[in-house]
Image (tube, rainbow, N blue to C red; front, side, top):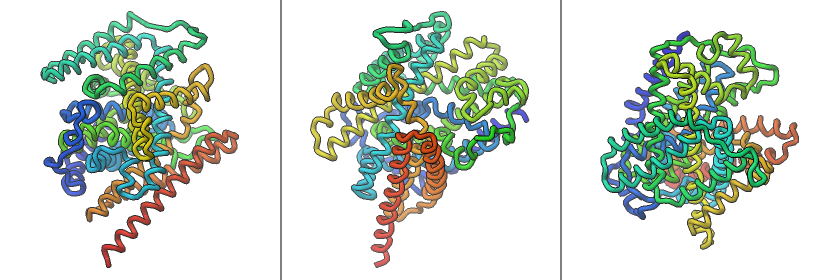
Length: 556
């Protein structure tokens, strides 16, 4: 089968989702009101709460939620076959992710920009808030610790990506200052993209590496420390200074990358060599159901999106009606990245024959980012005539910049959570932004080096929990939105049905993993997995109690 058919069907589905389904949800279910005073205006402090152009905010939201996950997840899950991966990405984007992201933005903006954990107190109850925030903090800890490792490893393995990755930060700082002085957005965007891709080209000739050993630590560990120092500083800067322009430029960079990849598909029209349904899986491969639905999270639906939507994006929402553009269209953007990833790792550009494809994908977990860069670079080189090395650097930089923007937002979000704990428990010291940032970065480094030793790879130890924990968080976010809708007398089935599906799949995946961790005698993961599963059950029971009491009061 030709990959162009997959691309056409997927894109048409997402276009229908944007123009039809998202409009219905925005106007008939959430009833977005352009006259509603958003937190960005009501609480404008010039730092975290800043009214922002919806296109710029879309760039922030899109690149913050994307990270490397919509590449890693689909590139692994295609092992079960490209058909189930494509179906979950397309229908997950249309019916699940877009509604989830837009709903989280709407719910947070209606509660003064509070995170989903903090606002759950108003919607469900105090106990729910405490339980919810435990899951959120765990997810943020996993994401920040692991993405620091991912970027550091990329810098070591792909030194040509170092120069453009840091150049992007300088470009963002300059653009932030110019936009603050009312320079036009479009020219700044064009110039920024040109400079960024010029730096990518230059990076192929200017590889940058740290010494293999420095200060008694390996190069990877030193990169991790440097990245967290940067993330700490970035999280304390006003959003207009670095976060917004960096994310927007990265968003535009991704659009260019997607145009290169999708354009190459239409020019080269490569065949698919991967099986539609893989019948040659190794003996110990876990069942596709429910594991597929937690392996592909970002790109279909992801709880991390709700943290970003309610943590940073809602604080910058200029008009409530912008939630549709920022939230739903952000999810569609991520879905297109996941879709082209599936094509890149399934086609002849990655493996010339089914036999070669099975050699690369010898087991679940094989392929991943490496297969995406190899397949995508060959696809771009064939379709556009660019050198393979240059195309590889483009894709490597894309992965690094995405992971970097997610890490930027993730540390800022951790700081918000810690400051919210300071408010909740009246701990003044935690309300201080610098202290909260140091606690956030400190916990990440403690995990990275405390559990991983001198390599700094400790985050990888609890990363296997991310899939099920992240999806359970998505279901809990949809639950909060559903309770809000029920209390407002609006139809909740459009959030309750996705919530139920995601929760069932994630919960059973968590149980499967619990058994797996127990048999492997990995008792840390057994404990953390059990905590997440118990918390999810307790939150559901709390929500059911609130809904029952509300409906009872309505009938009396």
